[in-house]
Image (cartoon, rainbow, N blue to C red; front, side):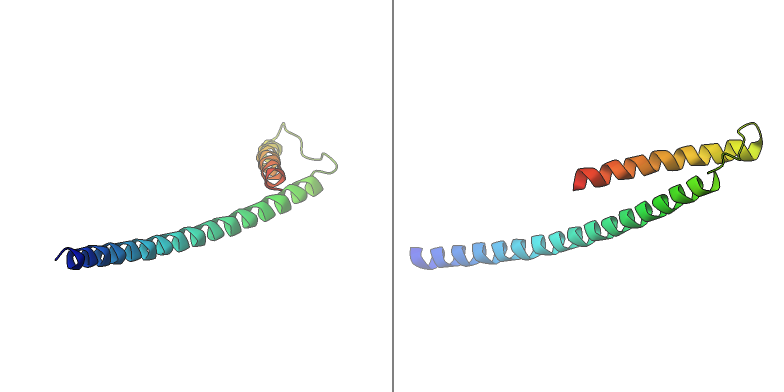
Length: 97
């Protein structure tokens, strides 16, 4: 009687543990897919920020935008934001290496 009960308990434990492994493997696969999507989004954002940063430097290479008028003030604010983003992304990629 006891060996039969032991076999049933071990069988149930094996089924439960197999289910848990299968479930966790699926969850891990979903998490890995999310991380890959996030990394591609970050790479896209970094590329766009780098392009914007280089364009802003090209546009204002002569310092033609004066901060006294509306266009100059807007340009300076945009340039400041892009400079800050560029620095943050550069620091983030240096830490990863």
